[in-house]
Length: 217
View 1 (cartoon, one colour):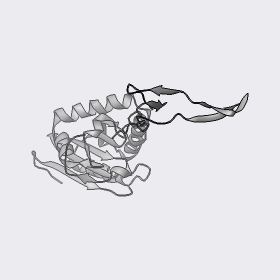
View 2 (view 1 turned 180 degrees about the vertical axis):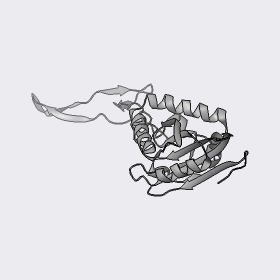
View 3 (view 1 turned 180 degrees about the horizontal axis):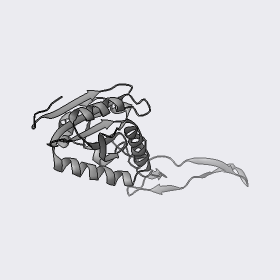
């Protein structure tokens, strides 16, 4: 397939199968009777009282232990990938803008790398999917950037033609050992016989849709 020098291919596929709450004790009543405990062993007829406190108005308050606020739950995504997600899916307009911009793409690739450096889970996910990508490569394609978060992966590839990239992406999509649940890609011609393709895809069944951009997380 021959491409016009300015030809740009942008595709998106949808693949299926392939407040912080503070823990707080109830507020004590301003006036309550002292709590009764077991009778004294030396005097069975006399019960002893639990410690009480007296408020400024002269009333008594039962002892209260306030639980410390619970820690915020860990995020399901790394900061870099959160910017590409909205409502549990891949935010299409954000992804398109990132894939088309040289600056945004390189910044995102570095941010993914930095986040993965502190996340063993992201590092393992990247290794697994990088091996799957390599299985589908021929001598016509060369992987450039590649990194993963906890649900998304981002990467780029150089090929001699747009058709070479398409052939690889079809082989990759058939790899059942590395399923993708949403996939966006863009191919552009750099020079005669040299093309760059960029892609972002979801590895998470819970992020298997594409959504309107909404607000960045």
